[in-house]
Amino acid sequence: MEEYRHEHNSTKHYFSENGKVTAWVPDQKLADFFSTGINTLTFSPDQVKGYMKYGFQKIKATVSKKKTIRHDNQDYYVTLGSDLFSSHKSTPVKISRYNDKLYIFEPKDNGILLAEALAKKPFEKPLGSLAVQPEANELDQIIAFLEQHSMLVDRPPLIETYHKGLSLTMAKQIFKYNQKRYAAYETKMRQPDDRKGLALFNAFVLDCQNHQRRTHVAPYASHGEI
Amino acid sequence: MKEDFISDKRRVSYLTATYNRIYRGQSVLIEGDFGAGKTRFLELLHPKKLHAVWVESLFNIHETLASILKELNYDTKATYRRTPEYLKMICHLSSCFIIIDEANDLDPRVWPYLKRIIDAGVPIIFAGLPKVRTFLTSEHPDILSRLKTLILYPIMVEKFIAEYDDIQQEAIEQIYMAIKGDMRKFKEICTDCRDRAKELNYQFVDINLALEFIADLPPQ
Image (cartoon, rainbow over all chains, first blue to last red; front, side):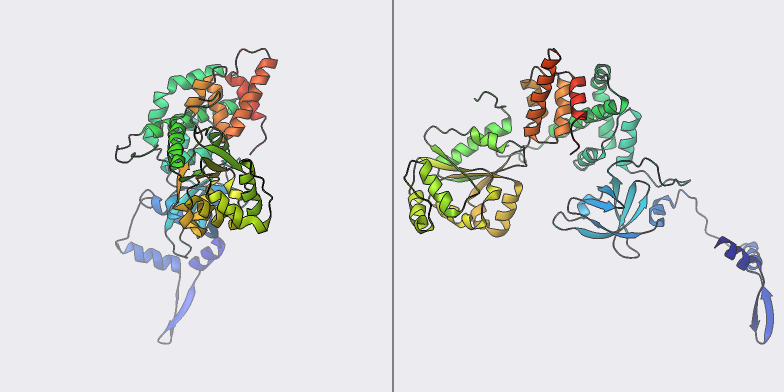
């Protein structure tokens, strides 16, 4: 394709106008046009980074009632925008994949981006990496934060906690508040690293659940039997 | 109250709510996922003035009605011919309440009979998976409106930490996270860990023992 384009653009093409045959080379024509000092539209990669998610190949898929997608022998959990899908019947959508992440679009050719989904487990071998990465959402940042602190993230419970209202700031606060507890955990454990990481992560999820339970509820909202 | 009952605030409140309902002749639906502790909760019900009649949810209506009466020492034989008679007898019962565990297994044809019993003022306590409520919402909203629905959630980890003093807090937390809300499995793993600790002459179950045990569990 690249070769064909090069050949097409750099060779002469002939056309006739009023019975007069003239030749033109697309590359030269274009260069002449731009050299006339025409105003062109310029933008930096950062400005269009948000639209990057539209650039991958789209395929048909279905979001199940449980807000999961089965694609290419992998289970994906909807992370962002899960409230857009029905819990009574499955929803047809179009998806595009970037590594262990799915971008979910309306099921039309020009459908807009609705939601994002994340694979149950990170892929052992990433499929490919781009020079400019698509923007990381809040959940990605939480995962990265936890992994920095030697936790092995089990995605489904974290996604569940995220849907219940966990934010990056909250995650950082909870981690900071319980840091001593995690350190005590680490000193007590004599286990392989992955088991240690998962145990730390489990402790963190419990702390998040605890924190979310303690969130203040207005008296009028908690009226009646608990 | 009972030897291994965990006095969870929600459960205590549910217990009071259930007593209030059945003493007024009204019925209750207890909903919860498997292992949330529904059966355990039903076993805690011992009202002083009412006699509990446990009913097996798998049987046909004539078996069900006859078994209720049999529990109350009536001499009854389960036959279709006697079903109207038995239904009338049950509707006239007093000082008893009916417990139907595993209500999700009930034959759809049984529900209208139960509705007559509920209306006659004989309290019934149903316990079952969330699909019981889904079924009633779509098929018998009239029955659902007669029931007070109480949703049981798994017991909070803090309650277990306070209760189990021979298992370290970290170990309980890890077991709790591994069982994903199934209290039956929780109890089973705790018992197994205690046995292992005894074999190894440990004084208590520590986190390393629990983690090794969890790692050996089959994936769910």
